Image (cartoon, rainbow, N blue to C red; front, side, top):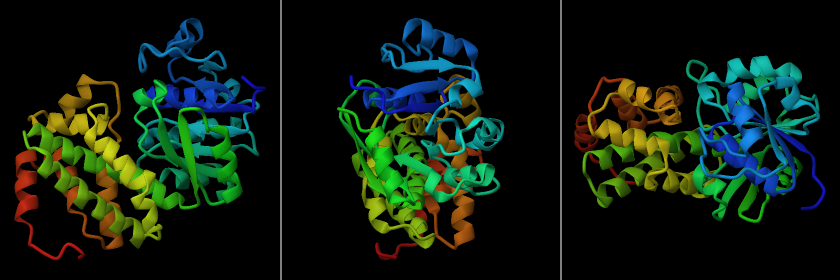
Length: 337
């Protein structure tokens, strides 16, 4: 490997934070992961494996882990965030003082904050007072286990400053990971958050025993709903047709590796959200963000039946069979409406 390009701090040692650390290490960076639990950091350093989240994946020697926030952030010119979106603001308020003042901060998270209806880039801006040229997002069809196994994948690196997007692109380009640049941060974030909700709906259809016609219909109408809201808020419609929109949606809705689709399947099989939460330590972001995306759509005057019904099922106000009946009972209209 060539000399290190620089140090990247990755806050979050779950499956996606760990997998993306592998990408960064393969791209020539020194990576320090911050782990919420000290024992996870010790295991990573001692065994070169994150057995809790990505068992069987050997981590490159240029990855180290720590439970110390200051140690993780020290000297980093890029700081990556890969934590659950609903706890992100609280965490970032604790981390902010340790982040180098010139570091570019990048969100890997795919959610919209409950209550404020803020995207993660907006939370970063609020908490750190960073300008848009220091805030980026990475989003695309990137299932963590496949990325960690170095299966070929592509993604979108977005920042309002195109030069910064290109810098980030260079830093996370590895033999198996091909990043494309964009300046449409909003479109990338909404595509990433909304596909989780659509993934829940598709999972419910699968859990109910329905086949490909049903799931294809839900995916397509979900994409239309995503594009409607994103465009209303100012996104480029081409973003929703690309890797951060359609690409991510297809991966989430078609793969059993997707947490959101798996969560939806269990809802379709009759489990409650509380029972599903109790059975796993992994976070299905769509189950948390469906309420905020529904509220964002309502605030924007957008019709959002998928977000509405998924939110009702997740909250226990409706069953999965009732959701399917309700979607089919909606008034017929032109596809272009």
